[in-house]
Amino acid sequence: MANLSRLEDAIARGGYSALLDRVLITEEQLNRRVAELGAQISQDYAGKTPLLVCLLRGGVMFLADLMKHISAPHHVDFMAVSSYGVGARATRGQPRITLDLNTDVRGRHVLLVEDIIDSGHTIDHVLRLLQTREPASLRVCALLNKPARREVYVPISYLGFEIPDEFVFGYGLDLDEYFRNLPFIGVVKKEYQ
Ligand code: IMP
Ligand code: MG
Image 1 (cartoon, helix red, strand yellow):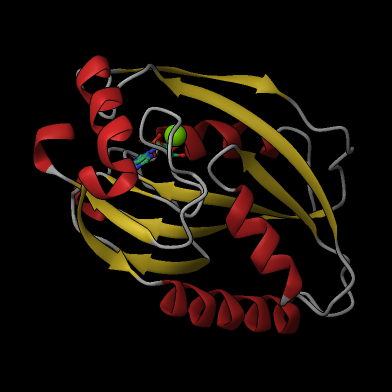
Image 2 (image 1 turned 180 degrees about the vertical axis):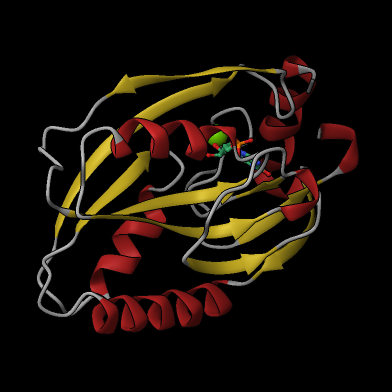
């Protein structure tokens, strides 16, 4: 677990650069891949008016960019699931829905938009819950996948990038709630992971 005051000291001294080991995925790479995913989704869901369900908070930047590239008519809604405590690698509890959908998903083509699939427990929990509401289809679109850490199988229909087992931040992903605003994905220095 990251030492919070050490983390905050580092942020005060140098902003994100004090925590950054290296840039893993650049802004240009993200833009290009997100546009490709949007084009693919537009094709696959043509004529279906899918409901994009964004998992807060990490998925928000990905969703916002992805939507711009989805030419097919679609709706969006939001859910929040909490499973991690404070600290980059804080031990995980049972996933808990802290914000549920406002949309009835029965008969809808639902596409879950998630920042990263790590152990898989969060998305597995959401998939099981939404399945009970009888959507017409239910798929996952994830920006990042860390296959080395998978504990439960997750079917991923659309994937941005496969990444190694390192803690990353930026582009929606946080380090103790900081740095979701960065336009790239960076690897956190080992001493802060
Ligand atoms: P899972 O339930 O283990 O698959 O965890 C998924 C959630 O953990 C994601 O939605 C993220 O919020 C968070 N997470 C997992 N890995 C990282 C990371 O490297 N950086 C930031 N957040 C992460
Ligand atoms: Mg998070």
